[in-house]
Amino acid sequence: QLQLVESGGGLVQPGGSLRLSCAASGSTLDDYFIGWFRQAPGKEREGVSCISSSDGSTYYTDSVKGRFTISRDNAKNTVYLQMNSLKPEDTAVYYCAADYGISWYCVNLVTMGFASWGQGTQVTVSS
Image (tube, rainbow, N blue to C red):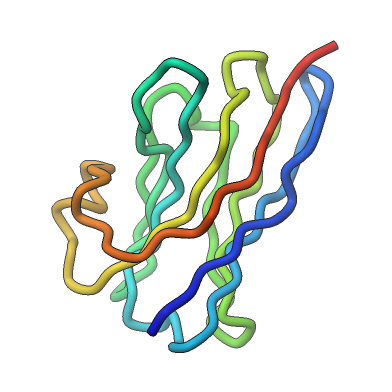
């Protein structure tokens, strides 16, 4: 059974950077679509980015385009989210999620398409 563990969150000033990691165990990530989602207090969970299993295509929500980069290292069984130029509105708990054969859900960053979820890591952007 696939298990996901996020790390790399923390407190950072506006304009700063963080790199989140999503480490997998129990299965290899090669065939999985991997998404990053976030949930701020009082708000619904929203899709941030996704990377496909087949050709490595990447997808981003508009608010993070040009600032965030998703990547995968299959040898390390880990997916990363590099976050630059962070803003206070990026403050949230960030989750990674994975599933097979969910191209449409990945492209459209829809949470219900993903079966396996990590426990989340807190990102706080504040001066």
